[in-house]
Length: 256
Length: 90
Ligand SMILES: Nc1ncnc2c1ncn2[C@@H]1O[C@H](COP(=O)(O)OP(=O)(O)OP(=O)(O)O)[C@@H](O)[C@H]1O
Ligand SMILES: [Mg+2]
Image (cartoon, rainbow over all chains, first blue to last red; front, side):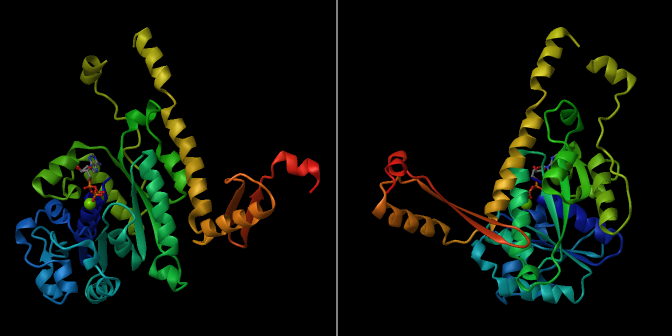
């Protein structure tokens, strides 16, 4: 769907702007974030080790080699999902909150325990959606959980700020009426739009090489994520990549 | 674009609008039932049992609907009586 791709990109984008940022993999058992971040060979301790007191947070955090302000807290590959306890997660987030400006939590798929743990303590939530029926429906369910099962909801505090990030968007298919448009999705979910990330070859290239796609500044997806970070930080930027790319004379000649 | 292509694109147009329509219905239903209390199925079952003591209704003659908005909760109970019972006048 694009959650891990997005977590890596947003975390890198925030850190590049000088904010001390930690990105945490909540996908216990699968562990993909370290691959996308390109630090899989530097994993010694993980999130569950820290929760269980087998390592302290500074031993487990991996500092990004490209950006000093960015740290990765990997998930464990072996433990079962219940290893993430509400108390344990809360303690780790509190500890990180003392020294970090932003903590990005990469949620696992679905609306089960891991996803619940990733959202429970959130202040802001970025709902990553594809323009597809099942994905939009799941996002709406997640919105229901955000507004009823979070700590903020339980304590009757101000609700979590929710943002929509639509990814794998293909303007050509939208133009043909084959894909839900960004406005369709917005209308159904009624959320603020943080960004639209186009379907892009750059994403696979980035994950192949372990470089968050936002660092590929030439690419459409990289630029779209860059804008999304800017908007999150309050910049007023127009949405790009919503229209079909204009074909050059030659490709028009060849492609028909 | 050939005539065949035109025809094809015309036929394909519309799956996105079908998706949107289906989603609007689905999401509205999801939202309405989202916070419904967990006792609802049991409540429905027990009401059905009570009614069946008096009237010979179908197993699915009772439906219980719960809705919630900002200001109120609505519990809607719908019982379908068989035609014969209503004409006999109890
Ligand atoms: N904008 C995009 N363009 C093309 N491919 C994309 C795009 N975004 C994500 N993908 C691809 O989609 C797949 C899933 O992406 P990703 O791992 O980020 O999703 P996820 O939501 O974290 O998945 P999971 O629920 O399994 O954790 C990957 O193969 C990724 O390369
Ligand atoms: Mg993932």
